[in-house]
Image (cartoon, rainbow over all chains, first blue to last red; front, side):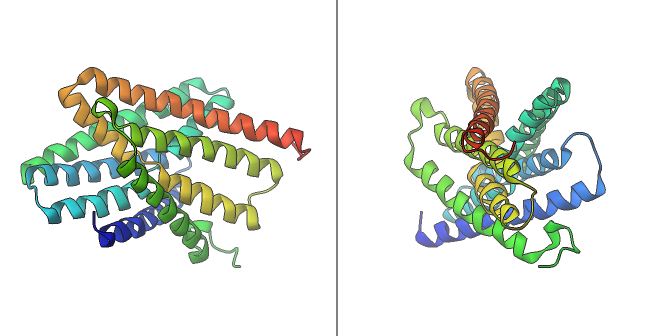
Length: 128
Length: 142
């Protein structure tokens, strides 16, 4: 991996994290829900995007496609999605004694993200 | 600093998240490049995700025990928590790795997904417990 790709990936990761902060704040301001669905929306949309990028790169292998996958996928979407917040949110629900909500939040996060990524992979491979 | 806008619309606060997110992404990139993948399993992603969950659990609990989420405490939360831990960890890579494993080795795919989520909860809870114990031992208010 070239130094330029590394630098762009790190910058894209920072921008992805900033985008997550803005989207999270905007969603929380609009939807007052008892489950922290903003993180679910962020992680499923990011997984859809990464599936798409990886599908395109798998179907259309080239150095440019690989660099784009690293900068936009590993960088931006890696910074945009978060596993740490997802885990801490489930622990917080468990500490409130809301075991059903905790299980539901963890399951929809994992299932939704895996399904979204699979859809992205299928579309990306078909387009590539 | 203006407090009229919610924090996600204050450029300086978004800047802390971007800075921390770039640093977290750099560490994740190094881990993905350097750490081994035994039996072609995505160990690097598992390790960065567990480390980030542990640190975020400890950070948020430690900060909450020190007082309200404002001023320097909020800055640290956004730089280290939302930024660094969020950039270090990734759910999109986890999801794609699970799908790619499921396509060829279903058992490995299911195992990787469940181990990651369950150990992630354990790591976050351990971080919370460690920060709580440390705050009690140093006499911070509960």
